[in-house]
Each structure stands twice: as structure tokens, then as C-alpha cells.
Image 1 (tube, rainbow, N blue to C red):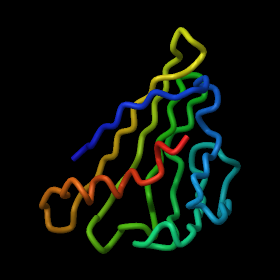
Image 2 (image 1 turned 135 degrees about the vertical axis):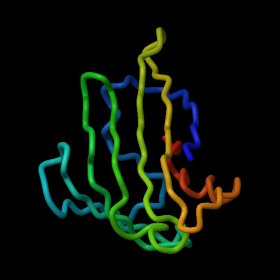
Image 3 (image 1 turned 90 degrees about the vertical axis):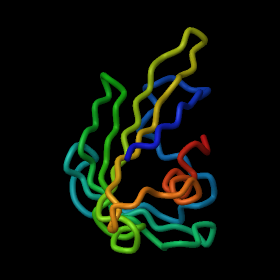
Length: 131
């Protein structure tokens, strides 16, 4: 399954990799790597995220030239409770007004092969568009 969310953002694509905190991130720790592909990060959440306390993700693609960032959740989050795997892909394109239009795609595999409900799918993108 791949829920897609088109985004219209007020900043240029070069700012893709900056962390945007909507009040739900308490800290970000680099577990391994230098921020490029292969980097593993642990994102710890505030009480605003009720379903889990952290996620560890692996950066699969960090392409600043193409404005693409793809990562896979490797620990925490919904792994093991509802999902076997899930990953996110952000792609931004410049617009004529100095802003950006973007697309967020979430690829996932559920444990029981049943599709996620609209509410469950919405939880996968919680905070993602809080720019």
C-alpha cells in the first residue's frame, strides 16, 4: 500500500532535509552515520504521540540534487504491532513563487495483509506536514 499526500510548502526544495518540529519531537539522536544514506537516527517523541515513544529510521536515499529523502523505520513506531515494514519517501519540486510542491509516499506491509483504515493510515503521516 502507498498512501500519497500532495503538499504545498512555503520554502524552497533545498530545505528538504531540515527537521521540522510541530511540538511532537523531544530529541533526535544519530545512532550511526553522518546524515547520508545508511545513517540510523532515533527520534524520541513527546506525549503528543500517544501510540509510541520513538522510532529508529535508516536513511535509504538522501539526494539533495533531486530533493528526495527516503527512509525506512527499523525499530519502534508501529513495527510489530500492525506493520511488518514501512518506509517514507519525500520528493519536493520548486514552484515559480519560491516555494515548493511535494509528495509524501508511505510504503507499508501489514502483519495480517489487511489494508490500514483511513485513521491508521493518517497516523503514519502524523506531523509530517506540520511545516
